[in-house]
Length: 72
Length: 502
Image (cartoon, rainbow over the protein chains, first blue to last red):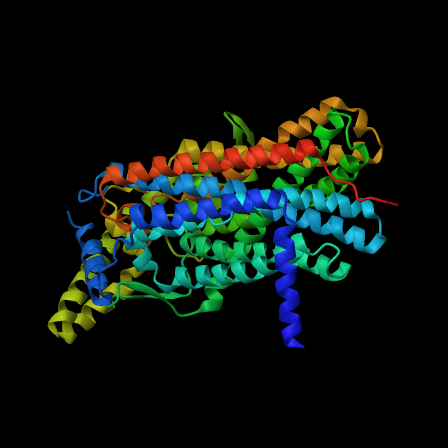
């Protein structure tokens, strides 16, 4: 019964994607956009500023920054 | 303001965040607004059995799909920026921000991804009622996502339900309910979501009027206008009502924002509301801000000088005093961390006590001059007038459209059809202006009273922020052009009629 339900869900999605018209263009836009966001922007332009630091180092860094910026 | 940080870095970081948020907000309101309208149309189909409503709902669903596909995930860029450009802020807010955003991400993915598939693929494959439920649940999923985003934003406007831990330099959530259901979050959610319904309604009425102007799909257009304008009128009135609730909260919790939105330098009791220039409505500002005709509304100078009586009977502190207490809090944080690291717990305990006593003024310790506490008054003032003025216009617009539609005159009133078409950009302008008031009006704060933008940003090269600013500008403009192009093509094609329609 559960196998049959899974098959029906699979066929529902498969047929839905096959019958798409405008949806193909929209999926192309979504995939290109996600590729640009995650494989270009995130990777090359938006690394986490605190990455590479341990939790203690992050606490230390931000703690020092917050004190330093108040006391020129 | 910050000698350690180039002020142009602060400005570019803010500009970059504003750009991405504003572009993201071009997509969100239409998604939330169309979700309600197409849900209602499909409900009419299921309850009356008229295929006309099915075709009508399907057409608006197609436009919803275009907008959703182009807009989806554009909000994630804001999260990239938190990690890269706003690292101090991201660390400082801790799990307060993380929890709502994580819930938002999971809900958005599972609810929207599941039911949107049934909504688009499920016609003739699932029962009418299951399909209808999926359509409403798609809209509900998007709306619940908006709730958590707005909870996070409301917390920045009025931080509640947390405690600052000087050991970790993070705010830790101590009361989830206080964060999720803070009055600021509730008011902001209803005001924002209802305003999105206005955008959806204006879009439906405007596009439908385009068909009337072209003498095409008259029955479809008039049917859509009736639903769109009804939703629009309800939403416009409800947005004004929730705006009033929001206004009282802002006056109490962010009085500088109200003073800037009014261009009010010297406040007092029974204050008038400025429409423009010397055109004023007597007592109206006091009524709007305090719900009391003689209520006291402080101006910018009063807020900086302090000394007036607060609603709880205490006396307002001056900006100088708040700055002094903020500096004490930051010095105590430094002393606590040094003592704690050295194992001197007695000194650490004393410093912690001092910090706790002054922590509510923590952010003021970064302010070098009281004048830096005043946001851009002109921008806030005019954005507020655009938002309120357009809100009033939308109420009038929907009333006229509904009356003319009921009298069956709308199909022949070309001036009103053209006005409806040109109202579409006004809906977006009104929506954006609302966010300008909310965000510019609370500057210099990233988190109200706790962290100014200059302390919140990462120490990056200004050039790298400028570069990503222009990358986003190009990327989002391309996306917007794609959306507009595909949308216009779909609109020109028009709705598809079901064969053997009764």
